[in-house]
Length: 493
Image (cartoon, rainbow, N blue to C red; front, side):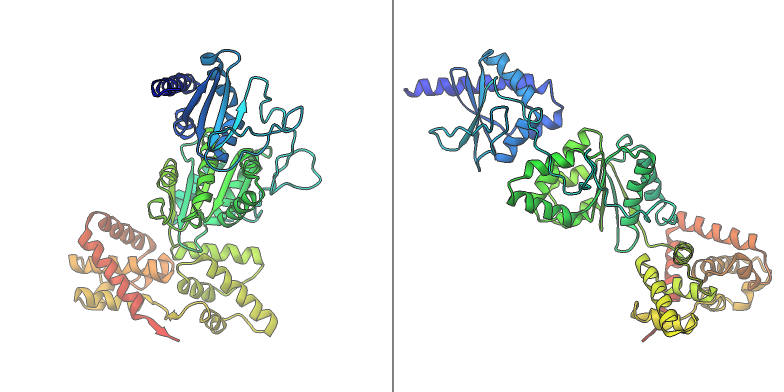
């Protein structure tokens, strides 16, 4: 064959494949077309056999299992009823497919690369393949495919205490649980520091979905377990089995997605699974220790998909929320702590809910094993094992002294009836900080300011918050005062 004939053959194969792509484009969604068909290259056309080149064996298997019908229609339209398609695979050899007459072995052509021939007589994978899909979470003894969701039944919305720190994430999670895959929160990515309740909230979503729709397939998996499954499936040449299993899910919950960073093969396969579930309107819930844009070692295309839905952060809980959380844990564990001990624990443990639970368990163990009464002294001993520094008790009197000094006004004026602007601001700010930092009731705080009632304290708190929202200079003063109060009342063990 001379050069002009070679160019003519190349032109013909390109033209035929371009025509096939036009047909395919009309029958698949744009994302699938970009992912699975744009990377394909036409190689040659011999009679009614078109050879195309695909990047790897996984790519070939995916086309055969998910797009065989559209490929068949396109080839028949361009090459007639006897049209056939051959694959040239750059890496690896495709696993034999099962048919009515046994495995169909791949054809190896003289040219470089591995090939497999598809003709009109071939059986469609997935319709005749009767092999059981390997399910790494299957429940033995149940004939119908049943997936163990891997959920902790104690992680529910009822046991997830709501506060300003988590209100958005909890509301979004409940919306997803009530209508999985049908909201704009897909994926829902919950992020925040260690010990703030990401796993609890993610599993609460799964538990709620199963409560409302028991027939749905829900799975919670850590990124570490997912990575290990990928490694095992590669070792056993069973990537397709794993991908097929994950496609069966209605809801996929992946915890600590940040640990996929730098794992290129795992990210590639997760990308395929993510696309298929999302296109099928299946719900995806992810957790991470940081926002999507800050995930290290993560492919840009994955980060882009994480941003498709809603990213909701969890902040450290405020004092009131910590009190509520510890109270709920006490009820669950059947432990009764004195009020001063509860307040002391919640004041010392400020950024980690797990540490609150750890202190409660340690106190219970100390009391039971050593026959000790749970009091403030025991609480101090236990907490010393959780924090490097312990905060001394912040009192309303101390706050009054520090604020009065900051504004250069006599401290006794804060309890007086004077309406001078500077003193009024100092008084309102003192009430606000007392409410935020001491955990005292509104009534108790009002008593220390000349016997004022709770409504005056509440009004003062709202006024300070409003000023902080509109006046950045005033907000800076408040934050500076709060920092001074916290740092001045620390003693090192």
